[in-house]
Image 1: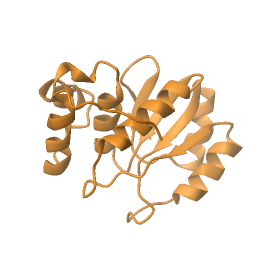
Image 2: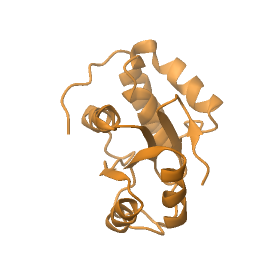
Image 3: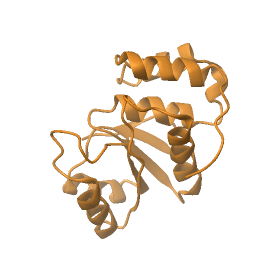
Image 4: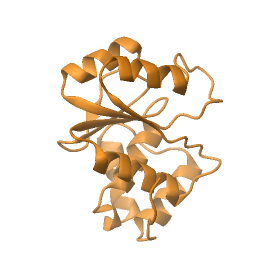
Length: 151
């Protein structure tokens, strides 16, 4: 897993391995935000096992389960809060990177730039949003729907 930078603080990617988590610390990352749900298929590390491996690698860990079946602004707020609290670089990940990229871009303070701009940036980053539910969610929230609360 090779993270793709969205900014100087935030990178996104697919599922990291235990070895990847150790390398992330060496690359200046301080925090991992996992968007995978506990019930997802093809998950080499459960969220609990990943949290333990992240801690062993010296990384802070946040689990914000995001299913395209149940998307809500509170998930974006939780990602935003995890990024804001991080003392350094943050990796936001899911299984392949699509959800991670979309939610990380929505979590940016300037996410009100519009859904189309967010979808375009996700595509440019190598994580095009192809899931229709996720695309609709990005269009709604990127269009200026207020994101309040923290998790």
